Image (tube, rainbow, N blue to C red; front, side, top):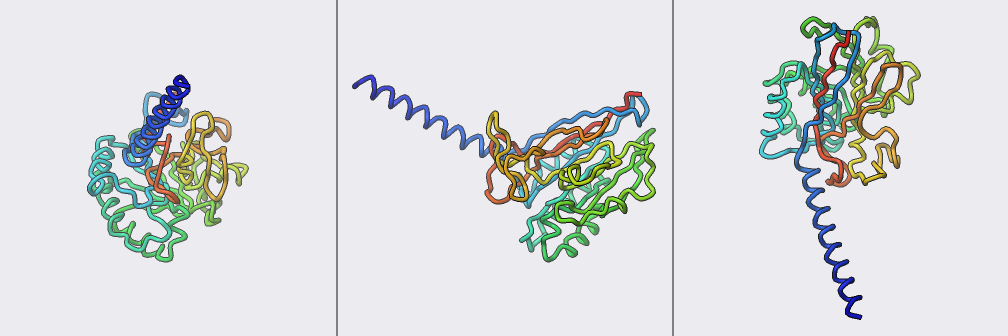
Length: 278
């Protein structure tokens, strides 16, 4: 009998440590962001050259400390060639944009090359046009089914942006109109399902968000809940090859929706470097 009591106490003690540890992990993953470094290579830019992109996605009005000072300082120190915001800066129910406008204004101060595409939450917000106009006034460059060339050192790349695909607001034909296919092409698409719904996308790299990486993940299982009421999503986070030397990268983002918790899936921004391999 004594042995059984001891075993029971050990079990309860272990369970208690596991519970507390899980709470601590959830707090860290939800409230302390990291930088995820992601390398790619291409023969479309000169050998020995490179360019860098900082991806920010799915903020959902989340703040990290007072006025996001640490996040802004991190963005400044990373000193990427340009910054892309791949949707869902706000929630569909947000009606006060003051804080997020302050955030993007500070980003533009440290890097004037900030580009943005819409997410499902912005397009579902009744004041979306007010919000988008405000972003533009803050100095953010909106790509709404558009493309533009960007010169970086010896290289010129194509940057393409589409309105959110999961709400059927995208127009890929318009977005890729008159594009130079010999250049390295980066497509910004909030929803990664664009690769499932279009057979041929003339992009070398697609940068997406939307999934939150599942927001809550478990070892050996991965993401449980995906966007758009899906479960165990295949396209959850990380790098996926969708064509010959064509890659989709899904950033799990910074914020939360539904329930304000991340677990085994830390908040992050991504520093993406593309190097020329000749």
